[in-house]
Image 1 (spheres, helix red, strand yellow):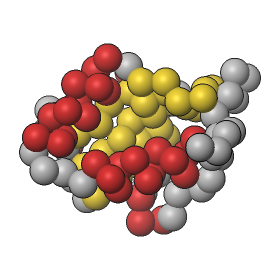
Image 2 (cartoon, rainbow, N blue to C red):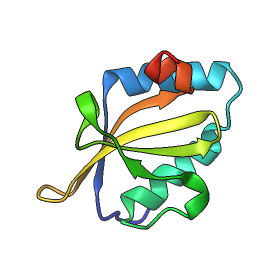
Image 3 (tube, rainbow, N blue to C red):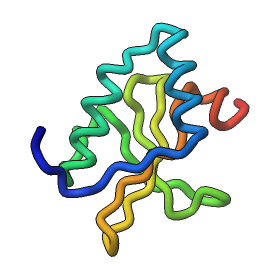
Image 4 (cartoon, rainbow, N blue to C red):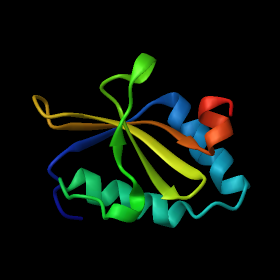
Length: 96
């Protein structure tokens, strides 16, 4: 296994969200590919709609693995850490 630019950390909430995504049949392989790109310091293609969040999640970023399958994450360059915070549908994450 190759070394990545960022150390990947997961929150306990992300772990629960990931299990739920698998039970729902969401493409967790595509999620893992997305995480790999981020962990290696890569830039996601435009189709991921990667963007910064505001409000309570200021400082975090969100990308669309699929149109209604999201990943919320935080990159801390000072300690080279990629923290996977949440994953799920829009309604799971934002109640909409």
